Length: 256
Image (cartoon, rainbow, N blue to C red):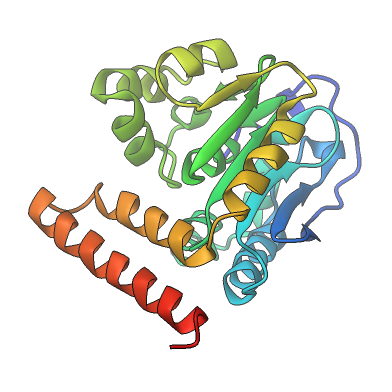
């Protein structure tokens, strides 16, 4: 979620938006396309994200996915607060279509290419990816507390694991905005790049990963994700099963 669009600097007036896929070889890009509203999300765009993620999972030609925002000013400003008025009551909100679970369901490695605003749900989308390539002028925030609620898209879960309990509490309890340099210092991002270089770096990184066997990169992702939830002994057993699967795939490709 996000601060109201009206509180952002120089908000344009267009309310159209969608989320779409662009593909080049083995790399797909999920593009959040509502630049006139800093790529703030509507419920229809939530469903677009789910559709795009399902398409990426189903397409064996796609090995890596990049998530980015259209335009020059924002990655994603989270949910458009005005659009939330369309929910009839709290029960409708509780049972809404959401966009973070589909991103977390991606089996292929996911890279966030972040520029400009990454607020509320935009921060949560970046955190839900496996790697973050961030322009130096990017601005992050989890402002939900100032609106009277908490974020529901994983900021507490991911920030605590990436940055530690204290940093997560500081960022989520204050709702303060923080820049890319600070995000880098607390361990939230993997690549800090000059403005305008974030997409190129993300694409280069995606090509490097996509050059490896997709079964191997998906196995690596599955193993690392499992480490967040299981004991070391359980994780070792799971890694062994994944490696056996990779070996079986190699043998199959050899025609044996």
